[in-house]
Length: 499
Ligand SMILES: Nc1nc2c(ncn2[C@@H]2O[C@H](COP(=O)(O)OP(=O)(O)OP(=O)(O)O)[C@@H](O)[C@H]2O)c(=O)[nH]1
Ligand SMILES: [Mg+2]
Image (cartoon, rainbow, N blue to C red):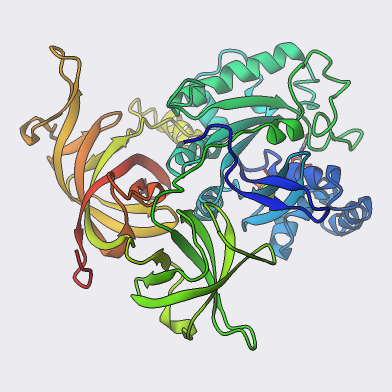
């Protein structure tokens, strides 16, 4: 792996070769993600002040003028009326050395599935936090989660979507509880670093590095921005980079370039006179014209005629590129579903019906709603995460969502005190839950080897040779909450799949 090489490059309109990078903008609802995107686009000259003025007018009719920058990304009427992002919206701008695709994700819990779609296409993650939420000294993890649980959830999930670096954007530095103060900023950094550590982001080797940047997407008094592309005179104590320079300076590693070429279909279209075009995002490897491909779960085989990316014909498409593939022959719309994966022949990943995975059950932080309930009822107990035998869960593999059942707990990993090595302990040592319904279970913060039976066959990959990392990582959800993360170690093929 090459630390300094940016794998994807493109010629800009004025014929400069620039690296391409995609950033998922994430964080709790209302932290200012869409506003930040709008401001980045204005600063880069991608939109004009007239657009903002027009948005201001639209905002007046629904009493939402503070959303004039957010409206650049939030274009659906229901988003504009509610002031809440629902869909994932992407836009492009340029820095000195990069073509940046910003992927604005929703922060609201109801649209968590869309946020997963956004982060799955990103090289970098930017978690936008609202500075006043974290300005009280000595907040513990529960306090932080109570304020911004979706930001913690996004950070937890980001790791399994193979994001390489994280920017923590400390937005709303103008808020009256913060007033651009260095001392308050240091408190915010100290508080939020606890979340980063909790999510195992450490700024050490083998961890995802992170960097904090203080800024304002839209100051509420002057209506300006601070430290987006120009250093802020309001924060002379800050000697780091602006937000734009931080993005510009990010170096990425090559990711899964040698793995089999796999792309996730987003749409199937039939433009007049062109035949069938599949729009997709590349998950691994490299796609080239002439390549023989198979599309699963339909098992349709064909060949790539041409590949387009950003309205240009390209000779190669790489990880996270959004592409349009023209194929030989015709595929009808109802032949493929939107979960389809396009893979190179003969290294295509397999359809499976059962997986074995090494999973870690995450520690459950307390949400405000849980906290309120506990205080109201005087109930001292707090909820914990666990994975039980025969538990029904929702599984995410990249953006594919499938229901599954825990059909076996094969063992729990423990450190052997004699050797210091991690060992898979036998099934007889798996704990049994207390109470009426005694079941084998994996307690929180434990790592176990489990077997999951899937409700329907899906395409996955497993650790080892030819691994497609993004298809080997799983996120386990229980209702709306992420309770465990894991990696597929083995599987049983689906009936119609060949070994
Ligand atoms: N004081 C202050 N308010 C800001 C700043 N940036 C954004 N806001 C306000 O925060 C509110 C939410 O902004 P959005 O950009 O819609 O937030 P979001 O994170 O995209 O929200 P969702 O996508 O719905 O999760 C709006 O009222 C913005 O005007 C800032 O720098 N300072
Ligand atoms: Mg938004």
